[in-house]
Amino acid sequence: MAMTMTEKILASHAGLESVQAGQLIKAKVDVVLGNDITSPPAIAEFNKIGRPVFDKDKIVLVPDHFIPNKDIKSAQMAKTLREFAHEHDITNYFEVGRMGIEHVLLPEEGLVVPGEVIIGADSHTCTYGAVGAFATGVGSTDMGAAMATGDTWFKVPSAIQVNITGSMPKYVCGKDVILTLIGMIGVDGARYQSLEFTGPGIANLSMTDRLTIANMAIECGAKNGIFPIDGVTIAYLNGRTKKTYQAVSADSDAIYTRKIDIDLSDLTPVVALPHLPENVKAVRELPEISIDQVVIGSCTNGRIEDLKQAAVIMSGKSVHPKVRTIIIPGSQAVYLEALEKGYISTFIKAGAVVSTPTCGPCLGGYMGILAAGEKAVTTTNRNFKGRMGHVDSEVYLTGPAVAAASAITGRICGPEEMVK
Image 1 (cartoon, rainbow, N blue to C red):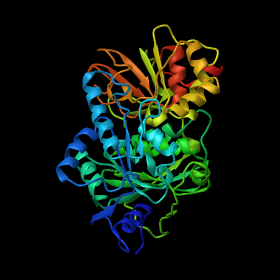
Image 2: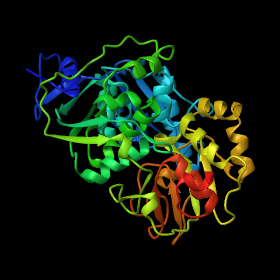
Image 3: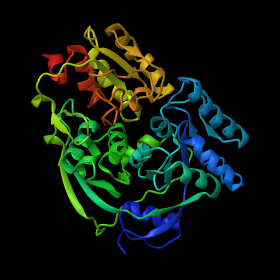
Image 4: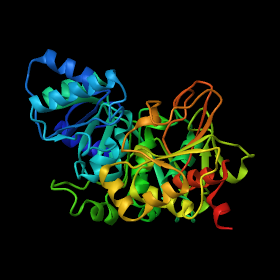
């Protein structure tokens, strides 16, 4: 029976020769992920089961949402996570000073590899499809049960084939690819389906591009997004992971509910306007929109390549006096590399502030909350009403180059304006 990548991975973890869309299965998991918000309720459910953790090496705990602790409540949540990790001798627990934003940290540390089943109590767990894994978000109850049993249930998703061709023009990045796709199909256009990326254009996407694209699969309702394993994948994993892995590929006659074609050569920098990621417009088509804040970072665009894009634009320039600009490296390793390459100096000299790795403002947590009437350009992944602060604020999603250029001009603009 012909299968997609997702179907093959789920079948192997369910101990079945094949599976098909709509089938209910119980599958073993290779990684169970939690953070400081979602893990405490998962731990409470786990404790009700009365069993030890199924494998201390396969549970990953990353305090990153309100960390370093924002207030007493966040400190208590972090303490719950910390005590659980120590009590159960969890191998992959990342304390402050060694942590990062979870979806930047796990690929960076080689903790996710092709062919795995990865669940996380965070909706952007789908990020790891970039390395050819089946990765999806679950609720805290499912996380708690999986920490005890090592398995969970799934309804096998049907799949959409996204055929990628061409190569990206200058200033276009993975963020533009996924926002363009979401703009095409809408925030529910792939509801409970797998986005399976194929085509010759994939070879022209860096791992950073792929991680960004897979990260936002959830923003069009997808169960997961997944890329094939190629030379880019293997080069990224070499020297990064100690795990052995099995490369999986879709059958040539696999069944897809629809096919979507994206020619990278036709893309242009875009922005998702409030208050949905599907409200996508080309930057060049926008009227003048003055802004109050820029955030560059997050699990979507907090990697070193993202910071490089921003630093190139901001080098030798100054942030607009009416704009607050916040740079958030995705991990300690990213922060250190950005420091060594001079990016941090560039940002500070330009008048930006550089934060410790944290989710922070992305979910309206801290480190950049918006007041009523304020507008922010951000490289994060959601712009729902009230997402980054007051319900009367506005969030505009875009890539690092557009965000950096907008920080300089004080209005949403393309990076081309910075090089005229």
